[in-house]
Amino acid sequence: MPVAFFITGTDTDVGKTTIAAGLLRAARLAGLSTAAVKPVAAGCELTADGLRNSDALALLAECSVPLCYAEVNPLALAPAIAPHLAAAEAGVSLEVASITTAVQAVLAQQADFSLVEGAGGWRVPLNDSATLADVAMALQLPVIVVVAVRLGCINHALLTVEAIERDGLRVAGWVANLLEPQMPHLEENIATLAARLPAPCLGRVPRLNEAGAAQVARYLDLSRLNIQL
Image 1: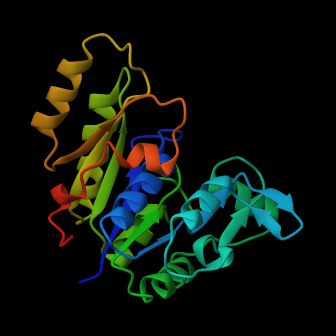
Image 2: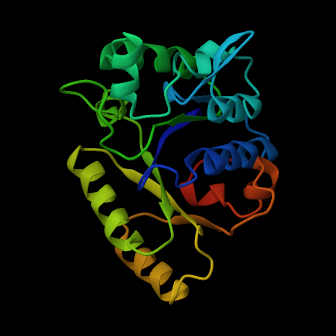
Image 3: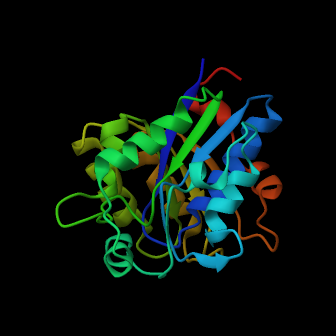
């Protein structure tokens, strides 16, 4: 039975795409078909094919279902700033309904394992009134949280999970991304997260010299999501 998850982070630059690509690769190694969407991406480069985002390209590379770039990243914005500001600068309107429709078109491909990656953290604005959380709520997807394990991670993770649950969504799992491997009391911090977060840890990803999908997948355990592999 196809499953899909929304993947968010405790902040921006916490490795959401790195972990998402690793999860997709782990699913492929388990024999599952894969699809992914990064509906809104700021910080795109102009190429001969149009605006392209490196994160969206990394996700596209891990999709076994045939998808074009525009399906994986329907809203590509050039400035590397908050999406609502990048959209205003580009004269583009970011609306929950149209974004949700674009994501649903990919989910309709019925891949065994699909991921929808947000931008930044849970409450990133889309416009004057809506945030990306509204898209997750419209899709009613369980959420995977990427926790940047560094000073402050416990507070950031607990607040993120609290917001997700307040929005009526289930946290399906979390990933510890060890951005500061020399962090004092690392094990104690991870133990506190494990004790306080209401979902299983899907893995601990160390700081890698080559953080490609294949390398990251080795540290992730999809079986903790309770899906049929």
